[in-house]
Length: 308
Image (cartoon, rainbow, N blue to C red):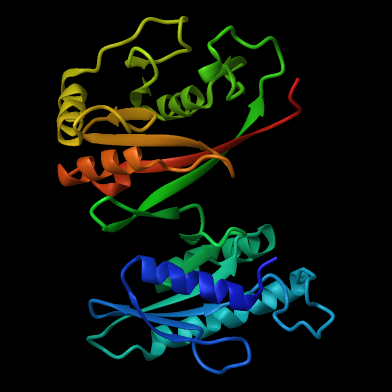
C-alpha cells in the first residue's frame, strides 16, 4: 500500500522524466504544495494523497483508508487544486493536479466528479503499486512514453476485460496459443482479434498486423482466413511509416481506419506486458510523418473465468 510520501516521490520522478524541473517537494510533516514542477514556463502544483497513513506510530499505518476517509482526502486534495486554479496569476501558465493511488476506492471517488475536474482543467495523476504514473480523470487514461529521441508523449490507455474461452482451444502454434483465448462473439479469439472486432463493431475497418513468421495482415485466426491486402490509402500510410522506421518491426498489433482517421492499437496483458523499444520507434516514426498521438492507444486486457 502506498503512503502519501511514496505518491509524492513517484510524481516527482514522473515530472523529472518528462523534463520538468522540480521546484518543491513536501512530505506529510511539512506545509505547502506537495509537488511544484516547471517546464518551459508551465508550472504544475500537485496535491497528493496516499492509500494508507505515512505515520508509523498511528493505528492506520499499513491499513487501507476506509471509504469515508478516501472521500475526505479526495475532497481536500481537489479543494487545494481548485484554489490553485482560482488564484493563478493572469498570463502565467499554471496547472493544477491531484495525485492518488491507482486503486478502486480512489477511482470511484474521482469518477463521481470527473466532469467537474475536466471543466476546471484539474489533472489526475494515478500512481500504481510499482510506482508508475498515468494521467487522466475518467476513462481518458494516458501512459507516458519516452521516445528514442528523448521526447515524452502521452498515449491513451484503454482497459478491456474479456471472458476466457472455456471450450476446446484452436490448434495454433505455441507463439499464439500460449497467450490463451478469449470468448468474443461466441467463439475463441486471440485478444488482438477481439480488440479488432470491437473497432469493427464501431464502424472501423482494420487488420491484425501479424509480425510473426510470414508477416501478414489478418482479420481472423491464423489458418482460418487468408491474409488480406490493405486498401490504397491505408497501404500508403502504412508503407510510409514502415520506410521511415526502417522496416515493420515494432508495428502495433491492430491497424484500423475510418474515413480520414486511423488507429494503431497495441494489446498488452495487464501486469505482464510492456511496450518494447521497437514499438516506441514505430510510434516515433508515425508521429514524425504527422500521425497524431491520439491515433495510438494501448489496450490493457485480461480474462475473467477459470482456465481449463
